[in-house]
Length: 381
Ligand code: NAD
Image 1 (cartoon, protein in one colour):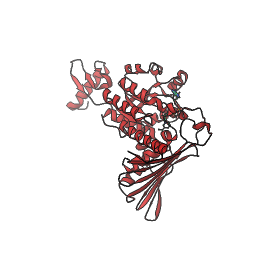
Image 2: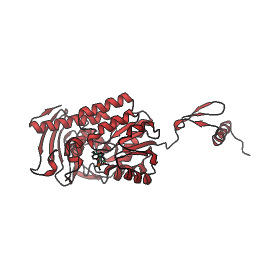
Image 3: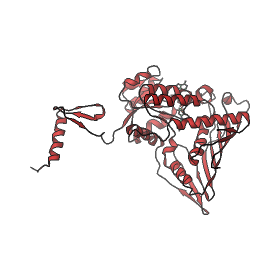
Image 4: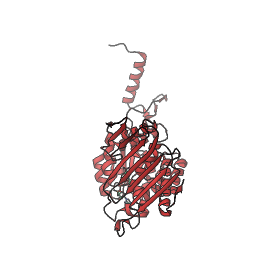
């Protein structure tokens, strides 16, 4: 029989007690009590995953978010909130969600009684983000909400206030901030590897279809292409420069008679002036074939991402010293990275990289862009 160290004997005894069922575990196994009422504090098991509830089972949830859980290290899907029980049940079967964890929009607030849910992900039309975020926070859960954060800065502020009051985390789903290509573009730009940044050019748009969809209804979408896709141009200008714009100019165009643009704008082009002198030229449209790229032009070179913000297939080119080189980086799932970041922030009580305040900043600039387009004058921030 091998000679056992004192430490090893203690560990074996402990394991045999666990096996014998004498030890009771508290939630998440943090505190263990043995028969002699001794208390042992143990760390979370390696590979611990927080439980997520997905609110709204539309296109993004079905095609990107749910499949991304397979690549998550700290997040697992445990609940759905949906107005369509058939769809929710089918997806529950596929993703191993317990059918008792399927909620609807009426009984959503009872999610507070479900200890399996740590974090709620709001994937509803923009105009519903504020209400479902606030209700989620009031239920004691942490909330990740899709972009744009809400329809107005006032709604964003309500969401931030609710998160502070509840003592729960609030994050906005700006997935590009978590994936390697955009992160590298930020690093190169801000480290002045291209010299001083002079101009940022960012274009995002696509030709939107069905005129009856919620994206073309002002109350559900908050606005048109700017709120949905132009926000990527705005984000890029802000995260690449690392500054907040102080002046905005904009022009808007809707094709006359196009039934899609009765309530919201089709195309809006805007210019941002940043305090350091960086200028950004940005476009946003629902009226043309897919555009998804940006270019940072510095005094010594430029970099380009095209596509820049698609879910996959991003490409980077960097020009310096008369040489243009293509850079390949690891391909990672944006949603898995974003969700694991949120889980990590909850586990370690850290502030998310893109908290509610970041969503509010975008909403304030977007309101200034609309003001400049409507008045034809420079809007100051
Ligand atoms: P979608 O239309 O495919 O899904 C919306 C979901 O909301 C559906 O399940 C629908 O049933 C539900 N819903 C509940 N009440 C509704 C109502 N009154 N009207 C319409 N739908 C209602 O939309 P989506 O493309 O999945 O977008 C959802 C959110 O995700 C939006 O805020 C959008 O901006 C955002 N989004 C983000 C990204 C990204 O890359 N981060 C990509 C696409 C969409």
